[in-house]
Length: 316
Image 1 (spheres, helix red, strand yellow):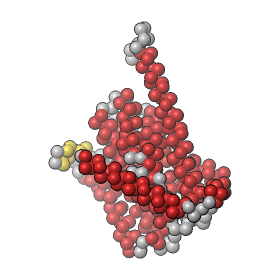
Image 2 (cartoon, one colour):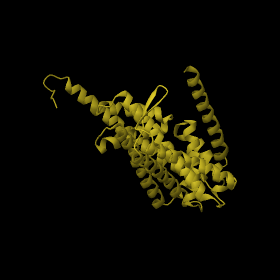
Image 3 (cartoon, one colour):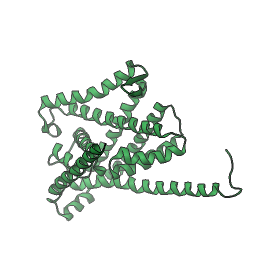
Protein backbone atom coordinates (compact mmCIF):
# COMPACT_ATOMS: atom_id res chain seq x y z
CA UNK A 1 0.00 0.00 0.00
CA UNK A 2 2.84 2.39 0.89
CA UNK A 3 4.63 1.52 -2.35
CA UNK A 4 1.46 2.17 -4.36
CA UNK A 5 0.98 5.53 -2.62
CA UNK A 6 4.63 6.45 -3.28
CA UNK A 7 4.37 5.49 -6.95
CA UNK A 8 1.08 7.38 -7.38
CA UNK A 9 2.52 10.53 -5.85
CA UNK A 10 5.73 10.19 -7.85
CA UNK A 11 3.87 9.74 -11.15
CA UNK A 12 1.53 12.63 -10.34
CA UNK A 13 4.49 14.90 -9.49
CA UNK A 14 6.27 13.83 -12.69
CA UNK A 15 3.15 14.58 -14.72
CA UNK A 16 2.87 18.02 -13.10
CA UNK A 17 6.52 18.83 -13.84
CA UNK A 18 6.34 17.56 -17.43
CA UNK A 19 3.05 19.35 -18.01
CA UNK A 20 4.38 22.63 -16.61
CA UNK A 21 7.57 22.37 -18.71
CA UNK A 22 5.57 21.73 -21.88
CA UNK A 23 3.16 24.50 -20.98
CA UNK A 24 6.01 26.95 -20.37
CA UNK A 25 7.75 26.00 -23.62
CA UNK A 26 4.61 26.75 -25.58
CA UNK A 27 3.31 29.76 -23.71
CA UNK A 28 6.73 31.47 -23.57
CA UNK A 29 6.48 32.04 -27.31
CA UNK A 30 3.75 34.60 -26.67
CA UNK A 31 3.85 37.90 -24.86
CA UNK A 32 1.29 38.82 -22.23
CA UNK A 33 -0.10 41.39 -24.68
CA UNK A 34 -0.60 38.73 -27.37
CA UNK A 35 -2.38 36.41 -24.93
CA UNK A 36 -4.70 39.15 -23.70
CA UNK A 37 -5.38 40.24 -27.28
CA UNK A 38 -6.43 36.70 -28.23
CA UNK A 39 -8.74 36.48 -25.21
CA UNK A 40 -10.33 39.85 -25.99
CA UNK A 41 -10.74 38.79 -29.64
CA UNK A 42 -13.31 36.16 -28.64
CA UNK A 43 -16.76 37.55 -29.56
CA UNK A 44 -19.36 37.83 -26.82
CA UNK A 45 -21.71 35.36 -28.52
CA UNK A 46 -18.96 32.71 -28.68
CA UNK A 47 -18.13 33.23 -25.01
CA UNK A 48 -21.84 33.01 -24.16
CA UNK A 49 -22.22 29.74 -26.11
CA UNK A 50 -19.20 28.28 -24.32
CA UNK A 51 -20.85 29.14 -20.99
CA UNK A 52 -24.09 27.45 -22.15
CA UNK A 53 -22.22 24.25 -23.02
CA UNK A 54 -20.33 24.44 -19.71
CA UNK A 55 -23.66 24.51 -17.89
CA UNK A 56 -24.92 21.63 -20.06
CA UNK A 57 -21.81 19.63 -19.18
CA UNK A 58 -22.37 20.08 -15.44
CA UNK A 59 -26.00 18.99 -15.87
CA UNK A 60 -24.71 15.85 -17.62
CA UNK A 61 -22.28 15.32 -14.75
CA UNK A 62 -25.25 15.31 -12.39
CA UNK A 63 -26.54 12.51 -14.61
CA UNK A 64 -23.43 10.54 -13.61
CA UNK A 65 -24.63 10.67 -10.00
CA UNK A 66 -28.20 10.00 -11.07
CA UNK A 67 -27.30 6.79 -12.88
CA UNK A 68 -25.11 5.75 -9.95
CA UNK A 69 -27.99 6.22 -7.52
CA UNK A 70 -30.23 4.20 -9.85
CA UNK A 71 -27.61 1.45 -9.82
CA UNK A 72 -27.67 1.47 -6.01
CA UNK A 73 -31.48 1.49 -5.93
CA UNK A 74 -31.50 4.84 -4.16
CA UNK A 75 -33.71 7.82 -5.00
CA UNK A 76 -32.98 11.43 -4.12
CA UNK A 77 -34.66 14.65 -5.31
CA UNK A 78 -32.98 15.95 -8.51
CA UNK A 79 -32.04 19.33 -6.94
CA UNK A 80 -30.02 17.50 -4.28
CA UNK A 81 -28.27 15.37 -6.88
CA UNK A 82 -27.48 18.45 -8.98
CA UNK A 83 -26.16 20.29 -5.92
CA UNK A 84 -23.80 17.56 -4.71
CA UNK A 85 -22.57 16.78 -8.21
CA UNK A 86 -21.85 20.41 -9.09
CA UNK A 87 -20.17 21.27 -5.79
CA UNK A 88 -18.04 18.12 -5.66
CA UNK A 89 -16.92 18.22 -9.30
CA UNK A 90 -16.41 21.97 -9.66
CA UNK A 91 -14.00 21.71 -6.73
CA UNK A 92 -12.61 18.25 -7.61
CA UNK A 93 -11.74 19.28 -11.18
CA UNK A 94 -9.43 21.96 -9.81
CA UNK A 95 -7.97 20.10 -6.82
CA UNK A 96 -6.82 17.02 -8.74
CA UNK A 97 -7.27 13.26 -8.13
CA UNK A 98 -10.93 14.02 -8.77
CA UNK A 99 -12.28 10.64 -7.62
CA UNK A 100 -10.82 11.22 -4.15
CA UNK A 101 -11.32 14.97 -3.76
CA UNK A 102 -14.84 15.03 -5.18
CA UNK A 103 -15.51 11.73 -3.42
CA UNK A 104 -14.85 13.28 -0.01
CA UNK A 105 -17.32 16.07 -0.74
CA UNK A 106 -19.86 13.61 -2.11
CA UNK A 107 -19.64 11.56 1.08
CA UNK A 108 -20.18 14.66 3.21
CA UNK A 109 -23.47 15.33 1.44
CA UNK A 110 -24.73 11.83 0.75
CA UNK A 111 -24.04 10.61 4.29
CA UNK A 112 -26.47 13.25 5.55
CA UNK A 113 -29.13 11.82 3.25
CA UNK A 114 -28.79 8.22 4.40
CA UNK A 115 -26.16 6.64 2.13
CA UNK A 116 -23.56 4.41 3.78
CA UNK A 117 -19.80 4.58 3.27
CA UNK A 118 -19.96 1.47 1.08
CA UNK A 119 -22.74 2.96 -1.05
CA UNK A 120 -20.86 6.21 -1.57
CA UNK A 121 -17.78 4.19 -2.54
CA UNK A 122 -19.81 2.24 -5.11
CA UNK A 123 -21.29 5.48 -6.40
CA UNK A 124 -17.82 6.99 -6.93
CA UNK A 125 -16.60 3.88 -8.78
CA UNK A 126 -19.73 3.84 -10.95
CA UNK A 127 -19.23 7.52 -11.80
CA UNK A 128 -15.61 6.73 -12.67
CA UNK A 129 -16.83 4.05 -15.09
CA UNK A 130 -19.17 6.59 -16.68
CA UNK A 131 -16.24 8.97 -17.17
CA UNK A 132 -14.19 6.21 -18.80
CA UNK A 133 -17.07 5.08 -21.02
CA UNK A 134 -17.79 8.64 -22.16
CA UNK A 135 -14.26 9.74 -22.98
CA UNK A 136 -13.35 6.45 -24.66
CA UNK A 137 -16.53 6.46 -26.77
CA UNK A 138 -15.93 10.05 -27.87
CA UNK A 139 -12.26 9.38 -28.61
CA UNK A 140 -12.93 6.26 -30.69
CA UNK A 141 -15.85 7.81 -32.58
CA UNK A 142 -14.00 11.04 -33.36
CA UNK A 143 -10.97 9.07 -34.56
CA UNK A 144 -13.09 7.18 -37.07
CA UNK A 145 -14.83 10.36 -38.21
CA UNK A 146 -11.47 12.14 -38.55
CA UNK A 147 -9.94 9.59 -40.92
CA UNK A 148 -8.69 11.35 -44.03
CA UNK A 149 -8.91 14.81 -42.47
CA UNK A 150 -5.61 16.75 -42.61
CA UNK A 151 -5.98 18.51 -39.26
CA UNK A 152 -6.47 16.23 -36.25
CA UNK A 153 -5.82 12.89 -37.92
CA UNK A 154 -2.26 13.78 -38.88
CA UNK A 155 -0.68 12.72 -35.59
CA UNK A 156 -1.15 9.00 -36.42
CA UNK A 157 -1.08 6.99 -39.67
CA UNK A 158 -4.60 6.03 -40.88
CA UNK A 159 -4.11 2.31 -40.17
CA UNK A 160 -2.95 3.00 -36.61
CA UNK A 161 -5.78 5.49 -36.12
CA UNK A 162 -8.37 2.92 -37.26
CA UNK A 163 -6.95 0.16 -35.06
CA UNK A 164 -6.80 2.41 -32.01
CA UNK A 165 -10.35 3.69 -32.61
CA UNK A 166 -11.76 0.16 -32.87
CA UNK A 167 -9.86 -0.92 -29.75
CA UNK A 168 -11.29 2.03 -27.81
CA UNK A 169 -14.85 1.43 -29.02
CA UNK A 170 -14.58 -2.23 -28.03
CA UNK A 171 -14.63 -1.13 -24.37
CA UNK A 172 -18.16 0.37 -24.28
CA UNK A 173 -19.41 -2.40 -26.57
CA UNK A 174 -18.09 -5.16 -24.28
CA UNK A 175 -19.48 -3.31 -21.24
CA UNK A 176 -22.92 -3.16 -22.85
CA UNK A 177 -22.82 -6.84 -23.85
CA UNK A 178 -21.72 -7.82 -20.33
CA UNK A 179 -24.62 -5.87 -18.87
CA UNK A 180 -26.99 -7.61 -21.28
CA UNK A 181 -25.88 -11.22 -20.86
CA UNK A 182 -24.14 -11.59 -17.48
CA UNK A 183 -26.11 -12.44 -14.33
CA UNK A 184 -27.12 -9.48 -12.18
CA UNK A 185 -24.71 -10.60 -9.45
CA UNK A 186 -21.27 -12.08 -10.13
CA UNK A 187 -18.30 -12.97 -7.96
CA UNK A 188 -14.68 -12.31 -8.95
CA UNK A 189 -12.28 -13.85 -6.42
CA UNK A 190 -13.25 -12.16 -3.11
CA UNK A 191 -15.42 -9.44 -4.60
CA UNK A 192 -19.14 -9.56 -5.24
CA UNK A 193 -20.27 -7.27 -8.05
CA UNK A 194 -23.70 -6.12 -9.10
CA UNK A 195 -23.99 -5.86 -12.87
CA UNK A 196 -26.16 -2.97 -14.10
CA UNK A 197 -29.01 -3.59 -16.49
CA UNK A 198 -28.19 -3.09 -20.16
CA UNK A 199 -30.54 -0.09 -20.26
CA UNK A 200 -28.70 1.60 -17.40
CA UNK A 201 -25.36 0.76 -19.03
CA UNK A 202 -26.58 2.34 -22.26
CA UNK A 203 -27.64 5.49 -20.38
CA UNK A 204 -24.16 5.56 -18.80
CA UNK A 205 -22.49 5.50 -22.21
CA UNK A 206 -24.83 8.15 -23.62
CA UNK A 207 -24.64 10.59 -20.71
CA UNK A 208 -20.87 10.18 -20.47
CA UNK A 209 -20.37 10.82 -24.18
CA UNK A 210 -22.77 13.78 -24.30
CA UNK A 211 -20.95 15.35 -21.34
CA UNK A 212 -17.60 15.30 -23.13
CA UNK A 213 -19.26 16.50 -26.35
CA UNK A 214 -20.48 19.52 -24.38
CA UNK A 215 -16.98 20.21 -23.04
CA UNK A 216 -15.55 19.91 -26.56
CA UNK A 217 -18.26 22.32 -27.79
CA UNK A 218 -17.28 24.79 -25.06
CA UNK A 219 -13.69 24.70 -26.32
CA UNK A 220 -14.76 24.77 -29.98
CA UNK A 221 -16.69 28.03 -29.72
CA UNK A 222 -13.72 29.69 -28.01
CA UNK A 223 -11.36 28.47 -30.73
CA UNK A 224 -13.70 29.07 -33.65
CA UNK A 225 -13.50 32.85 -33.37
CA UNK A 226 -9.69 32.78 -33.57
CA UNK A 227 -8.83 29.97 -36.00
CA UNK A 228 -10.47 28.06 -38.83
CA UNK A 229 -11.19 24.69 -37.25
CA UNK A 230 -13.90 22.02 -37.39
CA UNK A 231 -15.77 20.63 -34.41
CA UNK A 232 -14.72 17.03 -35.08
CA UNK A 233 -11.06 18.07 -34.90
CA UNK A 234 -11.62 19.80 -31.57
CA UNK A 235 -13.57 16.79 -30.23
CA UNK A 236 -10.72 14.44 -31.15
CA UNK A 237 -8.02 16.74 -29.81
CA UNK A 238 -9.87 17.39 -26.57
CA UNK A 239 -10.81 13.75 -25.92
CA UNK A 240 -7.23 12.52 -26.33
CA UNK A 241 -5.77 15.40 -24.31
CA UNK A 242 -8.36 14.86 -21.58
CA UNK A 243 -7.53 11.15 -21.33
CA UNK A 244 -3.91 12.13 -20.71
CA UNK A 245 -5.00 14.74 -18.16
CA UNK A 246 -7.22 12.23 -16.29
CA UNK A 247 -4.43 9.65 -16.16
CA UNK A 248 -1.98 12.27 -14.85
CA UNK A 249 -4.23 13.27 -11.88
CA UNK A 250 -2.88 16.83 -12.30
CA UNK A 251 -5.32 19.42 -10.87
CA UNK A 252 -7.52 20.51 -13.75
CA UNK A 253 -5.11 18.78 -16.14
CA UNK A 254 -3.01 21.96 -15.92
CA UNK A 255 -0.33 21.86 -18.60
CA UNK A 256 -1.13 18.28 -19.60
CA UNK A 257 -4.43 19.25 -21.26
CA UNK A 258 -2.84 22.15 -23.13
CA UNK A 259 0.20 20.11 -24.17
CA UNK A 260 -2.02 17.27 -25.42
CA UNK A 261 -4.14 19.65 -27.49
CA UNK A 262 -1.04 21.20 -29.03
CA UNK A 263 0.27 17.77 -29.94
CA UNK A 264 -2.95 16.57 -31.56
CA UNK A 265 -3.80 19.94 -33.13
CA UNK A 266 -0.39 21.49 -33.92
CA UNK A 267 -0.52 25.16 -34.80
CA UNK A 268 -4.30 25.38 -34.35
CA UNK A 269 -4.63 26.20 -30.66
CA UNK A 270 -4.12 29.86 -29.62
CA UNK A 271 -3.17 29.97 -25.96
CA UNK A 272 -5.58 32.82 -25.35
CA UNK A 273 -8.46 30.50 -26.19
CA UNK A 274 -7.07 27.80 -23.88
CA UNK A 275 -6.80 30.29 -21.04
CA UNK A 276 -10.37 31.42 -21.73
CA UNK A 277 -11.47 27.74 -21.73
CA UNK A 278 -9.83 27.18 -18.36
CA UNK A 279 -11.56 30.27 -16.97
CA UNK A 280 -14.98 29.29 -18.37
CA UNK A 281 -14.98 25.57 -17.61
CA UNK A 282 -12.84 25.37 -14.46
CA UNK A 283 -12.52 28.68 -12.64
CA UNK A 284 -16.04 30.12 -12.93
CA UNK A 285 -17.71 26.84 -11.77
CA UNK A 286 -15.09 26.62 -9.00
CA UNK A 287 -16.10 30.03 -7.66
CA UNK A 288 -19.80 29.07 -7.61
CA UNK A 289 -18.99 25.62 -6.21
CA UNK A 290 -17.02 27.02 -3.27
CA UNK A 291 -19.77 29.53 -2.50
CA UNK A 292 -22.44 26.81 -2.56
CA UNK A 293 -20.31 24.49 -0.43
CA UNK A 294 -19.71 27.18 2.20
CA UNK A 295 -23.38 28.18 2.15
CA UNK A 296 -24.60 24.60 2.69
CA UNK A 297 -21.99 24.00 5.40
CA UNK A 298 -23.08 27.18 7.19
CA UNK A 299 -26.72 26.16 6.88
CA UNK A 300 -26.02 22.72 8.35
CA UNK A 301 -23.92 24.23 11.11
CA UNK A 302 -26.77 26.53 12.10
CA UNK A 303 -29.27 23.66 11.90
CA UNK A 304 -27.00 21.56 14.13
CA UNK A 305 -26.76 24.32 16.72
CA UNK A 306 -30.51 24.89 16.67
CA UNK A 307 -31.22 21.19 17.19
CA UNK A 308 -29.33 21.10 20.50
CA UNK A 309 -31.07 24.14 21.98
CA UNK A 310 -33.82 23.36 24.53
CA UNK A 311 -37.23 23.35 22.95
CA UNK A 312 -36.01 23.64 19.36
CA UNK A 313 -36.06 19.97 18.38
CA UNK A 314 -38.94 18.85 16.22
CA UNK A 315 -39.37 15.27 15.10
CA UNK A 316 -40.09 14.41 11.47
